[in-house]
Image (cartoon, rainbow, N blue to C red):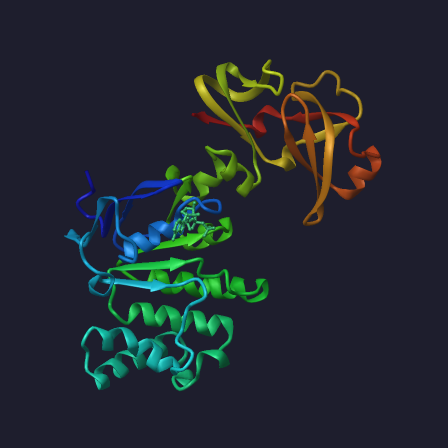
Length: 353
Ligand SMILES: Nc1ncnc2c1ncn2[C@@H]1O[C@H](COP(=O)(O)OP(=O)(O)OP(=O)(O)O)[C@@H](O)[C@H]1O
């Protein structure tokens, strides 16, 4: 059942020869949902199905309680910001924004008035006559957002809204976009690969893998308690699944043997245990007399990670450790070396699987 106050309530089934998408998407009024997932997971398929650009094999799309399933794209109260913005190059910014209302039968003068108001709201009043190619990436994105909002959508769809920008401008455009999305009272669904986009822009995250929803929740909760390898890698956590027995979790080691992980608190049943690479300390010799978790491991690779060094380890448990370059030099570590990895129980997050 869909919540009565959902602005968007959809079940989307799309069947292709080698791929099936089957997800439910619920978004409250004013809420921003980020779809996060690896390449080919089906995120763009979700957006295109919601926009009416792709027929459903099953399911339905309700926006503000209205069934849009059979409606063609141009009759849906939906605004779309495409990945590369897809502004019409031969039209001015104003004409680009006025295009949607014009297509929906709004008279020219009125469409231009709507467009001018939206451009002004985006801080682009002085760019109405500018052609898209003369705009910066951030400006083009705002024109694309204004164009999407010009049809007074109840559902706003953004496909990788920051992917076309260089790293330098991305941060400021991201915070501008956040403010603008906060002012929109319909449902927003955005697609991203970037966990930071999801953290900053979204109220809730839906992780899609191989056509199915695998995890959903507030961005911070998803980041803190990943439920799949993909999410754990994305947010940079070591993640294991196992059976809890009191304060120990028995995780499956590489050889199939159970590897105990001591966790804070008492748990039972199937659980996840997760900890960040910065919580892992490395030693040449097994540290004696410590209540910490200690596991033997071999250095698999080393990479620079910010001002730290990320060490990848193999063994019964595969794990990543962040240490300082000085620490790496002190330990004189190189690939293949045997070490002991150690993690305090209090650094381990344990939660039901
Ligand atoms: N037009 C199409 N015809 C056939 N198969 C398609 C089509 N578009 C996408 N696919 C396939 O459907 C699956 C989902 O693709 P989709 O583009 O939705 O994934 P995505 O999560 O958006 O990926 P990315 O992050 O790479 O854009 C993939 O297996 C893809 O190869």
